[in-house]
Every structure is written in structure tokens, then in C-alpha cells.
Length: 173
Image: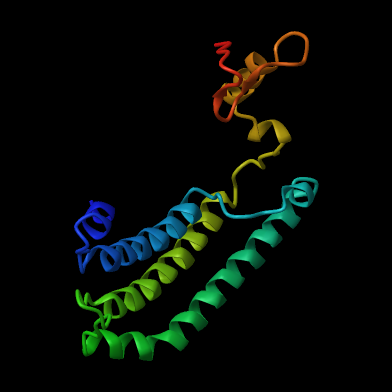
């Protein structure tokens, strides 16, 4: 819609870009919290998995302490600015003029506090859990592997690009 209105009718909307920035900011913040909850953050499993359980717990404790420390300093350093922007309901300064600074700055602090809390919850819930050994097979997508087998064929050479479909007009599916 925005592309049509802007380039065909030569009259773009005032709110589309700002609304997109606003929603993308909230989505990005929530994605970080979701990643922490799902334990999909970065960890070097090659080293972590070969360590004894007591050392894994030590690594987990250090990692959680660093997350909480980072969150504390981010909240401590950003509270004054976020509070000021929220109290004066600072606007974006465009034609649509949404309160992006007033809402996003506060949301960053709230989400970082929740990420730190989730890190502590993860540490507590994983403390007595059985260790999980990670292998390269954990990252294999069976459907993708089957598509590769179909594309390559029995001879090891195929005529299908698995990322875009058939090549040279041939469809081997």
C-alpha cells in the first residue's frame, strides 16, 4: 500500500515509516526476551559439553552474574534519560510524531530487567537438570536434508537448485 501510494499517487503516508520503526523496536526487544526464555542465546558448546557438571554450573553462574551486572548498569545508566523522556512524553519529531522515544526507552529498561530475571530463572531451573550433550546432528533439518537428497539424486549430481526450485525448466520433484 505504502509503495503504491508513494510512487503511483505521489502522496506517501505520514505514519507508515514511523509505525514500522515503533513496531520493529518492540518486536526486537521481545525477541531478545524470547531468545533468553528459549535458551537460544550463544554458547560455545564445544567447550561447555566436555566440562564436568560442576564446571558447567560455574560457567552458568558466571554467565548469569554478567547478564545481571550488565542489566543493572544499563538500567542504572539509562533510568534518568528514560524517565525524563517518558515524563515529558517525548515525540519522534516527524509529521506523524509518535512517542517512540518516550515508549521505547522505557521498554528497553523493562525488557532488560526481564532478560536478567529470565537468566536467573534459567540458572535455578537448570541447576539440577541432567546435562545435555549437543552434537552437530542437533542442527540438521530432516526436511532440508531430504530436499538436498532429491536435488542431488543417486549420481551425486542433480538439476535442481534446492533454494529456488528447478533449474533449466526441469522439475525433479
